[in-house]
Image (cartoon, rainbow, N blue to C red; front, side, top):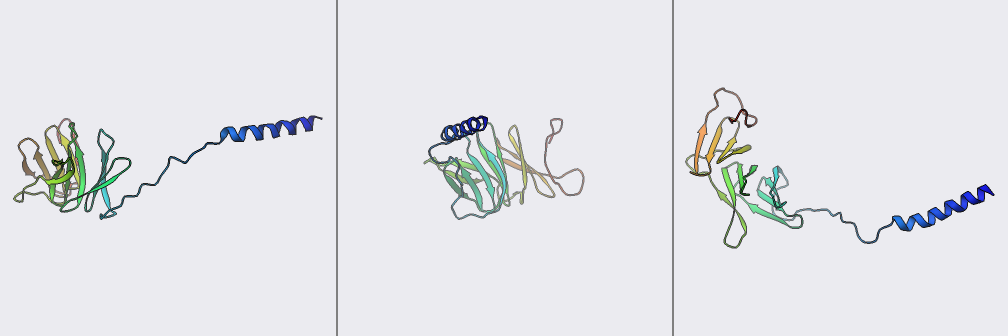
Length: 172
């Protein structure tokens, strides 16, 4: 009698719990693969306050807003991205510093900030401190003043290769 009661209870739970646990509709997961004429190699990624993702790529900058992919071609590889408090996105890479800027139709485009006379090359890491954008390559530190739009090349005090840039005690 006890075995019959236990088996009936088990059947009751199996029949009632299955429909309660199921869910109708499709899964919310999807695979987001960008489509476009760009390279598969990427170096840096950041997200703005609106949730848009920016990916530094060997052929430009890829953007993803959660649904749509866009690609902004640049003259050379972009290795590093920085953002300021106003949402301006700055780039650095093989041809120096650049910026992503909106045109009259609100489309993003790449604008070169470095002039040809003093252009930092192969800048692989950037850091924005107040109104200055700093970048490094293996041998030099570059300082781009966002207000005056002047680029300076600063030589490190000691020799050797530079590997990263950071702020310590308020100094770069």
